[in-house]
Image (cartoon, rainbow, N blue to C red):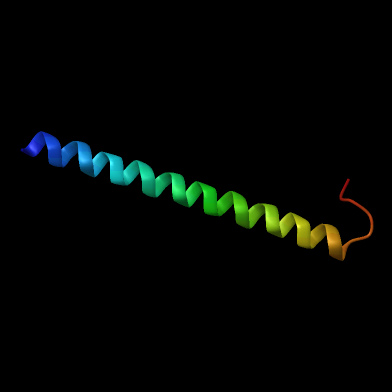
Length: 44
């Protein structure tokens, strides 16, 4: 019983971590697109 709860808890934690990483990469990508639109020349 406790083994099932432990594995389920681990699965939830892994899923939550993946969602946070995906959200962070999306925010980073959108920020780069906004910066690219605002600035005519790319950052060197």
